[in-house]
Image (cartoon, rainbow, N blue to C red; front, side):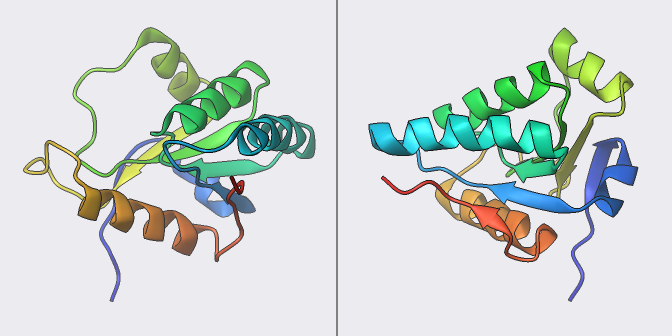
Length: 135
């Protein structure tokens, strides 16, 4: 069964080789350091990183990737955003970001079930090529 995805940004990023990134909300210190080092490596490898970029470490990785000119696909566990931060708009305008969601306008808030579905979508988009730092 195919999932209809709603998108905002550069859909050409779906044609690139992709690697996923998932990190729990409370990883250990080694996992945090590992995630930051991994993010820098992906910038050098010119990978397109797919993630929800929702947990604190995922948000930090998003910032590392955006500062170092990486390409990213952000998967939401709710509808597409109505308002965007100016720096997100810049990433979209520079064709470095694609925002995806399988949810229509009725899904306003994330919950555990929707987050698990989002993480599964990240895995599918990356054919299970996903980095998950261990605690």
